[in-house]
Image (cartoon, rainbow, N blue to C red):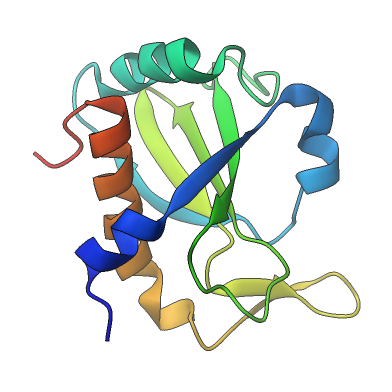
Length: 140
């Protein structure tokens, strides 16, 4: 069985620019966790801007100033066709969201998959990956 660290090594994030965001949109993306450390959201935003440029979506409200969306490669995510991660700010907190453990049924309604109970492990894996990639401490 792969450990979280083993899986982290195989995780790859493919940035989805604003021009392609609509085509990657999924109704199954749900909040994994919100990280509430002073200045963390701003620090992550600066690093994502350096690495990826402009955010994937235009801010929806004054409480939200960025949202970077990625396709995840290198992790098993069946039965979903793809795996999406969103990194955003919400009311000065860093919000990590994903459709991991969710998929859409025939009517395009979100339903839980057998991986739903592994969402907290996936959130930890995502944090580790982002911490290594962005060089920003996400575990405090």
